[in-house]
Length: 308
Ligand SMILES: Nc1ncnc2c1ncn2[C@@H]1O[C@H](COP(=O)(O)OP(=O)(O)O)[C@@H](O)[C@H]1O
Ligand SMILES: [Mg+2]
Image (tube, rainbow, N blue to C red; front, side, top):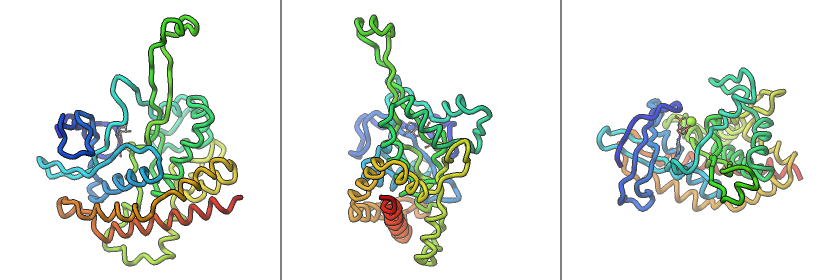
């Protein structure tokens, strides 16, 4: 990888890097931009959450930018390497926040305390159409499964594609360009999977404690401008099951197709990866993440089944 400038956006230190024209690893796209993101120094193993979340995205068939474990031999830093999810010059990325700030006067950008489902739904329908609800709620399912608490208005968004119209279309529509919007893949998934739980505590987690942890988990997003409470991970699944049976069926299908054995294997394989000692994925963390995720899936499935 070649390293370039620091990237100012977002909370954690990170920089843009460019892959070589002939990468050694087959998973690396040649001559492509990547985001190298370091863990919060308080939680040196946090970057594993980003990688495992990507693997969960794959198993659920939900678009997440490919994310790999990375080590900078120059500085000794470890982190996750996230494949750039669009081609510069081809698409433009707009974070959802851009539109929330225009829509809601006095939006609190710091906390995102007006980031809400109802406004999101209105924007999504406007920009993408009514079918977007399946994609949006696939993300809500994904976030509930990984226990993501940080999908704020800057952590999802739209890709805008401008393509020139043919002369005849341009004449008829009186537009030289067609605009198409779609969801960007769901990026920044590392505030999840119990990353904040410190290693020597894992044995102390009995089943009740695990369930209580899961029950407490919340999305960042609120219900609506009239109800600015954050929606719980499990609560969100109950909510959609109640309000949209078609989405509920899709989510249940995704859960059913989730290959638990493959998930287990994939996570356990990461344990062997060579990394500086303080940043290795330990066997006990890997096992804890597996246990946590499988229990989340169980509880989410129950919530979706409660409403039929
Ligand atoms: N793979 C990627 N492709 C394109 N843009 C990215 C990618 N990863 C991050 N970004 C951009 O960088 C910003 C910060 O990255 P993010 O993963 O959200 O880190 P942080 O945890 O610091 O918020 C994002 O809001 C997005 O604009
Ligand atoms: Mg972010």
